[in-house]
Amino acid sequence: MIDKTKTKEYLDLIIKMKDIEAIEGGLFYSEKGTTRFANSIIHQNMVVEDPWLWIRGVDKKRVCGVSTKDFRKEGIERALGKLKEAIKEVRPDKDFPGLPKRPKGFRLKKTAEPEFIDPEQRGEAVAKMVKVCKKYHLNAFGVLHSTRLALGVANSNGIFNYGTNGINFVSITAMGNGASGYAVDTKSHFNDIDFVNLAEIACEKALLSKNPREIEPGKYTVLLEEPAVGEMLMFLAWLEFGAKRFREKSSILSKRIGKYITGKNITLYDDFRHPEMIGFSFDFEGYPKSAVDLIKNGKAKGVVLDSFYARLLKKKNTGHALPQPSSGGPIPINLIMKNGEEKKEEMLKEIDKGILVTRFWYVRVVDPDKTLITGMTRDGTFFIEKGKIAYPIKNMRFTINIYETLSRVRKISQERKLYGEDIFFLLAPALLIDEFNFASKTEY
Image 1 (spheres, one colour):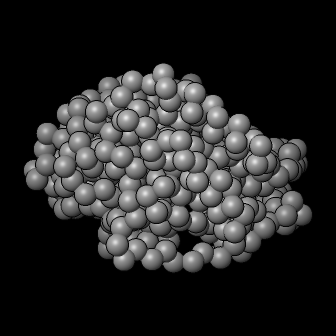
Image 2 (cartoon, helix red, strand yellow):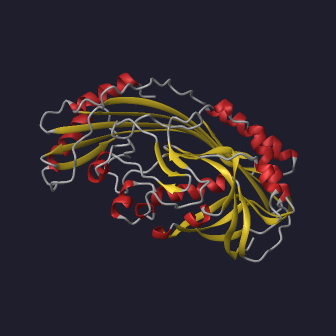
Image 3 (cartoon, helix red, strand yellow):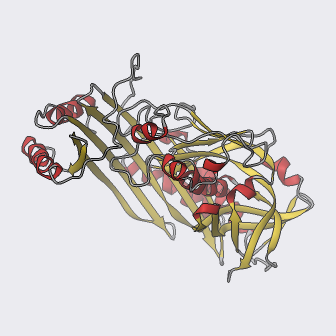
């Protein structure tokens, strides 16, 4: 990894530049170990390092940025030279507030260097999952990522912050005889993942999925498991909880602050400090993150901000800047849904007739201004009768308005799973929802 000392050395070369009024340098380092497997055989096992530097300059309200992967002194100097020339051609941005300043009293908590997971360790984990699948005469498909991240940001206003993260992500699909089952997990520490249990879950779903029946489209009571809920909330975060669409008043939330926007049992917030969450304590401008209430007990509360949109909206910066320039503005990247009081198995018992959904796939936005999305179920979709799984069903295409769907949530599970990779993470529970709209059948 590129450690704090080396990061500061690179960034000092940038912020000591004297020919531009204000300057910012950032280093983002990613080291991703990837093991992919199909038909119970590993077909890819590698480690890829991907470090890059960005530089943003501000001069007479002109803002310009460049990036480089050449970390040598002459490479950084070459990038600075390109910035000096390019910034002369940029039109002034009268709305740009300037680079953020270091807040008084902010002390960054030190982070330990994440553990390195070598290809042999990942291979052994895959072998455990394959062994389980073979026991049930199924094949294993999936991916295992072990990622180490480092982020350093400095500017000429006194900011210098450095932090690290470790991320271990695994997904497994067990397949056989036209049936499939899925399980997924994300943890900071590799040894916290129970690979055998994940494979057992995937296999159980695959075995239950054999010979699916076809049912008619329509509105059903559903139990959405955590991966499906996470997929839905990811789209809501992108469409509704960022400052750009809020300022443009193109989001529904921007028109309903202080009013009910979902059911009263829905609370969504962004907070990197949650013990199950993975994230940096500062954003890509080096500014410290704050916890932000987005929806509280069903009422629209607010959005996340970076320095630019905090100035435009006359609000406090919440520390949610993405790498600049960011055409989409800030978004929440440590999103959490408050959990409920019942276990999933108890929620299942409450369904007289309905559908259990393991996960979604191929989800797309139909109408961003209405939070209308469409997609399909996959890898474990079952019809429920009298509180028990009755039989597997063929996958269905859904079309839903996310806010309307969150207004019909009957129960929220105690259990939550972390969903996501790299820099975007979501802690999602399972949801029991009435009148979930399945628009059409699929072929399988």
